[in-house]
Length: 244
Image 1 (cartoon, rainbow, N blue to C red):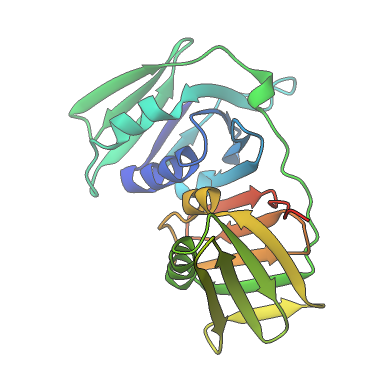
Image 2 (cartoon, rainbow, N blue to C red):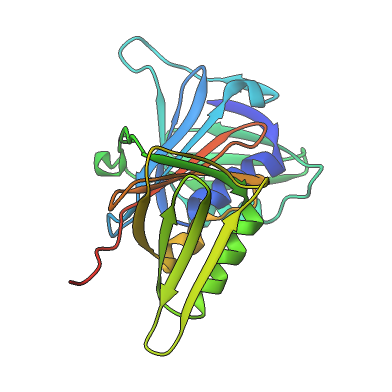
C-alpha cells in the first residue's frame, strides 16, 4: 500500500476513531479505507469511510482472493506520530510486512509496528432503522450534553415532531435542555425516548463537521452521523437500560 494524503485529513480521521478504540483493523481497497470496530466493552461502535478520491495518490495491491489490504495498528502509537504534523504537511503512508511507514513532507520519517491480525477486531456495521432523525449543530449538541452532565451520568434523548429534549437526573439536581427551531431539523414518525451514558457520548463528538445527524428510537441504539467534506464517520451507542 502506498498512499499520499493531506496530513490534517488523515489526522482528523484517526483521532476521531481513537477516541473510542485503542486498536483497529484498517481495511484498504482500491476504492476506500474503512475502519469498523467495537469498543472493548462492546457498548459502542465506530465506523470510518475514507474514499480514495480524498487522497493525492492511492495505490493498493489486491487480488480477487484478497480484495482488501488489512493493517492492524495501535491507534495510540499512530496518533503520537500524527501529533507531529503541521496543517500544510503531506503524508506518505506505506506498508511493509511488519511496519507502517509514515513520511511527513519529505523531511520526517516514522515507522510503527503492525500488530498480528486479529479477526475479532473486524466488525460489520448494523443496519438500524430509526423512527426519528434529528440534524443540528454539533456545538448545540455538545453544550446540551455538558449541561446534562451537571446533573447525572446519563442523558435521556426525547424527541417529537417539534423538538428534541435532552434531560438528566441525579440525587440532587435535574436538567432539561430543549432544542428546537429553524436550526434543528426533525423527522419523526412518533415520539421516541432512550437513555445513554454521557461517558460514551463525550467520546462521540469529534470536531470534524459543523452538523451532526442523530438517529433515535425507543430503547434502541443511538447513531451519530458526521459527513465532513472528505470522509464519513458513524458512531453507534447501545442504550442504557433504566432501572424499574
